[in-house]
Image (cartoon, rainbow, N blue to C red; front, side, top):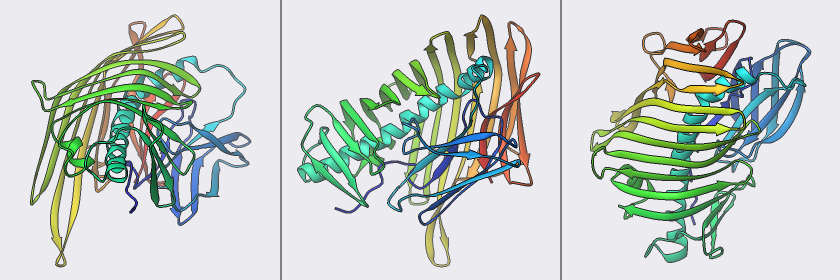
Length: 390
């Protein structure tokens, strides 16, 4: 059976931030079987490099790097068959502090990361059902149980178990899908099913990383997009209880000249952990246009996208109340790379502490290493929220 990609992110290898990090990840490269990561470090400090095949983990320790200067790097081999990999670097510290810093980072990151996990898992789940249906039933019916096992560039299918569909990646990560509803156009493939009107309800479990139930209702009724996320998510060794609802506008159109996509929704609900209570009120607007162009007699696709995230969450932690006030992160991409950095990218708004001014959202670009990032600037430190390589 020809190999298929089980995730929309299979083309990329990404660096993810860690809440405790105050350093700058500057580069990630992959040459055949070798992966190299570089970052700005503190001299005479120790860092741990971690990797995962899935954005929610489980994360495994790959190396401990002791630094003598303010520049650090790590290189290792990865199998060429790996379709995707995520990396993060953490400063090793014996301190148990950082409650405020880690809480604020999570207040920005966890809700968005949950929706990203929903998008990724929905893509993987739909592709897995399509592949299992081809291998297990010749495409004659939907197959939502059994096991798909990655073997190099190919996949094998087994009938067991009969209550869920398990995807076993070559990296050792097992993802289990408990699919309860799957209605829509599945005649062509997973991509068509996800882009067109559909109902898709499932639970996805990743040992040691997450156990979340997602629902997705697109195109039926008004509003045109409704989704929920309920369950647990583990991040930086903390288990968060997730209860989120997404409501908004969804549009997808396609013709011979290309396609356009819009998803503009408000996210509300709660994220809780021991001593941590976050009331979520965020809005995200994502728009993408893909144009089919003729170049030298051959056609190719070029994409442009914009993304705006407004945060008005409220966090209670350590007896303090933090309130995000129209905290905006705005960015754009062309063919997957940051674009219009000087004109479109921006950050604004900030965070109140117990009703008084406390932190500001800032956008910055570095010309030396070629990166752009969003920071939350506090009175005594800077929390890096996102970083993108130019």
